[in-house]
Each structure stands twice: as C-alpha cells, then as structure tokens.
Image 1 (cartoon, rainbow, N blue to C red):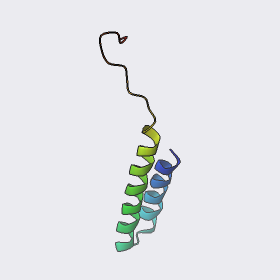
Image 2 (spheres, rainbow, N blue to C red; image 1 turned 90 degrees about the vertical axis):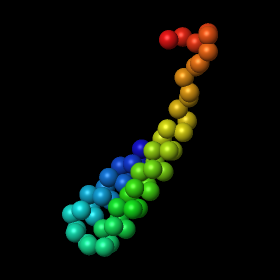
Image 3 (cartoon, rainbow, N blue to C red; image 1 turned 60 degrees about the horizontal axis):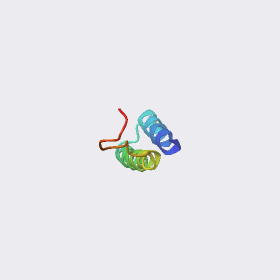
Length: 56
C-alpha cells in the first residue's frame, strides 16, 4: 500500500512542478510503482472456495 501512496505522491509533485517532459518520466515511474504496489498488495489474497461444498 505504501507504493500506491508513493505513486500518488509522485504524480502530485510532478503535476505541481510542471516540469514538461520530465513530468512524463515522473508519471511513468508513478504508474510502475502503482502496478507493483497493487500486485504486492493483492498477491497474497486467498482465492474464494469453489466446488459443491463451498459456502456461499
């Protein structure tokens, strides 16, 4: 979750500073951090049970 918040902070700072082409690099880094952070956040969530004995 920290990486997702870091990505939000990078986008906020980049948008505030209006750095032109450097902003594009900042947005790309933020997108990568958000994807990696989201993957790390949800990779350990267990799959719901399936099959005839599964509770609904």
